[in-house]
Length: 199
Image (tube, rainbow, N blue to C red; front, side):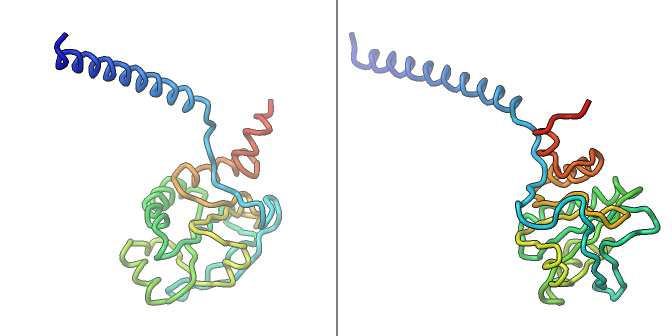
């Protein structure tokens, strides 16, 4: 047999074998995807406990308006405190998600952006990304009060000043998991899935 014909036959056998392996891997990925539960915001082990009163902190936004954080609210609204930074790439990716959530959840939720650092840099960040619709506060003590060690980090406080959810936020799903955890009355979606839905 001609060596050229033989090498072609071997190559075709390898291509067909590789195609079968790829199809098997694609099938396994589909099975794996079905088994993975939804992942909520990552709650760090340390920090404030869900269900406790959130620290009440009086701060002002970049325009000088007072922005009360925590405490009982007469308007019955929930407050989402989102810690961001101009140097955090994930924070920038999440800004459109925050704007969308502000519109879709406006009936019950107020979103406050929080950071610390240089006032000029923060003001430029607000202008560049069109964040004027959010109260934007600069306060290092606020981050310390809520024990924020990584960004972007979110804290959900109900109208009674009680901490309802918190965690690292890297996607729209993580942010929405905080809202869902509050609705279900659990610390996180992971807790809910581990304990199983109540009958």
